[in-house]
Image (spheres, rainbow over the protein chains, first blue to last red):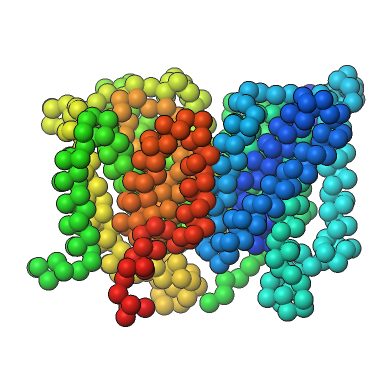
Length: 291
Length: 316
């Protein structure tokens, strides 16, 4: 394998892992209430920006990151409690518009509370690139990949081995049946928004040392996360992870071998082609319409 | 011939005509005319988009792409190749119709969020191409667009444009209302209810969806081209994902499956940022909050909610 290809793979996997975390957030909320949460990207932004401002106020990085994830989770819970919950029973498009309104509101607030400049975060452990097979990888990339791996394993454990997680899966399969066996669907909704917000915030904190963060980074990251979730198949956990990694790799290879200006065009073009061939994404459930 | 005059359809058209005719009395200066023209142009896009979203039940998050292609197509043909503006506008609109037809065939088989993503992806691709092909489009800085000329007379000044856009808006509403009441329109609404059921009663769902998709793209491209010639300047911002979202929001805000809802949604959401501009830094916050609150408390949108409130009881 050429060193150049290896280099593209490293950067693709790093970005892909971030997309995967955002895509997981999309899928968790989609499973709970069939809504695409367009404010998902703003969770990423809030995570990064909150950490930046907490560090500026003198807190050490781990504590700042923890508080930022907590604060973003609260924002996610508030979004569910005060907007999505109240609009229960509205059409899917209406719910989408509500989350778009929320994303504009949150972006506006971020511009007010913080500022409209680019901010960096210190790397978690050093800046010296590590040489592997002729290519180099940043220690921060290892953090991104490592933390994503831990999160994916933890989520798998949560959804398959704990009562709360199983309750959430049951709700996604059949809401009424879940309610009948005593699952509190309201709490499932609340937990799914909190969990998605926390995942988004984590993604924002992990990537900020590499790509910087700002009040408006949520738009593009949210879009890519949505694309990854769709590519993998909405609502599928493994699909979200593989969709994210695939999208990241596609972009990195397109940027490296074709044109960096057109990397998104190539990534989205291939995604369109996949959708046309596999209308439910790579791992989405094939559903039949009920009449 | 006059039998239909009492119907809601003609009543609405007459009311719209009256509003357009009387509005200039309230328009104090060119700035107000400018806002009114932008409302009209956006309303034309929304009427087409509403046919797709509100009646056929197919979402598109990429219509700003069609809007942008219409705008840039007409702009490039006139500015770079010296075409007469009307011919350029027509050619750009036909080209977008062809593109929508070719792309629509495969992607309209997708459903729900997958279709949303596919149209979004298409819109993103178009907007990136527009930003990058700066030889033709002027890149992120945008490009100048020659004014529209009708039969050798340049159409200039807000007042002249106001009447042209007003007339086109009435035409667009009339077309949409007729389409909705036609057998094709009923077929579309059947699709919204259930595609499988519609196919069982013999509706060619693929053909119907494709037709309305192309039609809505044509409305967007035509309004895009007009907007470019009217403003005399166009930037890639008008083709982005955010503008697509704005358009969908106008449709949903006004009320889905209501042609007049689409017009009112366009009017409110085009005017609101102008009013909020006074708030400067708080503009986005208030705009986002207004969007959320209206959709939470009026999930069906402005016009259907108000109509249900004031409608005579016996109809329900």
